[in-house]
Image (cartoon, rainbow, N blue to C red; front, side, top):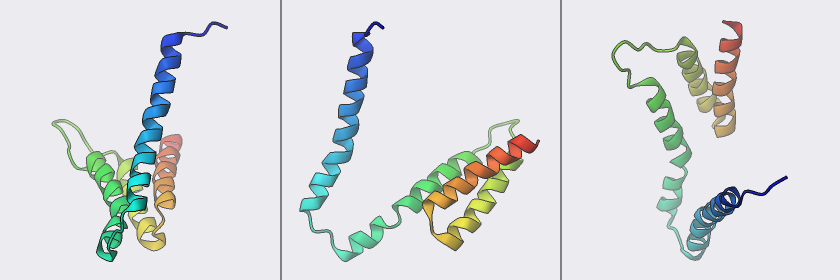
Length: 106
């Protein structure tokens, strides 16, 4: 098996960028004292990310497009699961599962 150096350098570069983008905030924020109001604000980040992803998928319809039934069903069930469990992983898993099941059955 031949090693392609350009691919190896891309993999190593990607690993370094990923490590730095995850380690840098951890190192910086571990040295800072974040006030209580700042910590409460950080608790809303997962919901904001999920809302942005959902809005991007459901809201902007271009001419001639229509809403996918599977996406609307998944959004409604994700909202229910998210409100009931407050678990990001269960909410995302529910959405993925609903879309997969809908597409398998139709």
